[in-house]
Length: 313
Image (tube, rainbow, N blue to C red; front, side, top):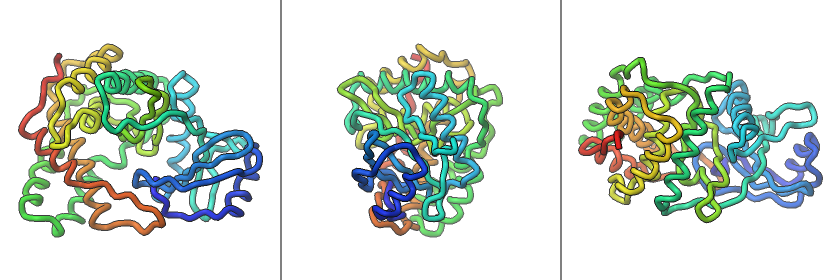
């Protein structure tokens, strides 16, 4: 959501002629996130978000956008993509793939309450359940192969302690998970800045551009690590229980998931520690950039190593 590709008014006006959205009234770069360029776009026909994909290939975008449409069509508060005059969700803009989606109402919650966490747990379970009827398949591009490759690139830039921690967690991550763990569609990035609320009502889930097919428990671990962690990386018991209880009311856990919970939480923490280290050490150029602190996920990882509450409440 950082701005890496600057779009001028006349360029956007030409682009919008491919849609039935009316005349451009305003556009503004969004200073949040780290993966893509995003603009708020207002036209005569409403408010939208324009995303220019900096790393995602043209071939994989239909998976993300049709998934968003599938979830929206089944009642989830996801941003429905807008088709152009030819019926396509993706077009090229400044030699990069781009898409327009409807802008959802609400605001991010930086300090969640029990009610917020319960709403997120419920919504995540619904995504997993509705994903069963989605036909698209995409192997996680940020899986173990990516983790090993990224770690190799970063290793010599890290302190001795961080090198030892990284080696330890990669060794654990490379051990195969139980083959019976439920798999399906995962959001893979359900952080606080990707969910919107009006008071306690969840009104929007955005940024599906890391979605893929993976372990459902891994997606839950990613979500818990962000929504339920305090400033020291430790899990807040009340927030944790609220999110887990709401989730399992919709999708009860399998027995093998209880055993894998600690490894999943650590794998999820490792993934975001690595990506934030990469962005800090090898930053991308951009007009507006937003790099998140990797130490936040280092603390979360260390906390999960020393303590993981039971998934069986």
